[in-house]
Image 1 (cartoon, rainbow, N blue to C red):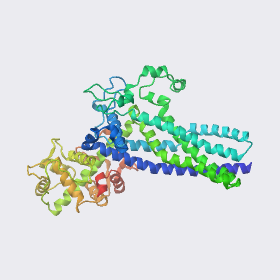
Image 2: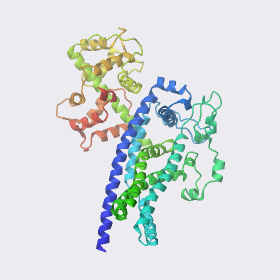
Image 3: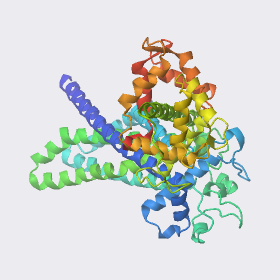
Image 4: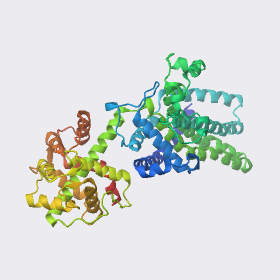
Length: 526
């Protein structure tokens, strides 16, 4: 009995090791998935690029371009947040999120949550594997403990699991694509694929809007009725297996696959490979080849499957308001950090003497190839922090007032010098394009500031008495100088992020961590 206990303990140790390895591989793949979503988000923000690819034939594009088109359509529908009932009108007013919402970042945060849920093994999963163990023990008895027969049965199981995984992936892709609206100028094959094309002059609706609920409810499975307590599903819920329980089912299946392959590898090494080796190389070599194939196939396909699982669990009616709020707050915080960088650059320029502005090609001239349209839009948001009147221009009194309110006033001579340095066409005010040109020139040249240089300078703006600490009220008072409309909830989350030790004061290290988390993306390229 003691020997059996030790063998079981040793086996569980190997299961944990292989599970940990798979989780680490999944984290690495998640990093690539996040980069891909951020890349596609940047492409979606590039209106010129999107107009170009949307004007072409969808079927003629390469796979990457099609992926971007589908991503963009899902993103647009996410922002519209349509009503679940006809006529499927988009949300309006406060219920609608901004058109420049960072959907890629939203998906990345939700991906992290999905990984956390996957690692936290549910009791249902353990119950399932307990039943699986009983069944497999019964098979062991039927084979009269013949390890050769049992070994071949064991390697057959992951192939069955891969078939189930492939079927699940196809289902999930179909669900995801049902949230995308195919452009209405595409050919009639889109109708055959189930997309609902609007009348001429109207917008195209996503596929889920075309679902015939009468037909679906008449064919609804008994299991779906039981698990959902006979509650009628919405059109979006009806897309999933088991309806409302579908997203959780997908995560459980993926989690179960991770655990199964952990057990599979552990038993291969401890029991079946040694048993096959004893039968001779004629058995061992074919067996090890057949046994390893599903492991490699699973690793190749798992990242795509998990990405789709995460996507479909956070779009449509499953959107996560708390994550949306977090993304919007992060963007606003990045604008603030960039705003303080601009002020630091202005003071540095004031100390060095203001050079004449460089001549450019006029309005809209933005030829810095390392900057995407999304980055340009971020800089425009920072411009709005300085443009208190909202008229599209920064005037002398606006800049002077902001500098004074932030606690770093400029003298009349230096203020005028700053305006002269930014004002390319000498009309007495700074346009959005002029501001962008100056900013890009500053961070692209030798006068740029590193994060290590920026943090103590900005912190010093808050820490006027030099104590090395800033109260929360002092910090928020400085932020009010910028034209950023933080909500009460966003301010609360920002304070929680800053004051990690709940001391009521912000130290330099805490402030440095905030800046590092929200350091403007364009500065990572320089």
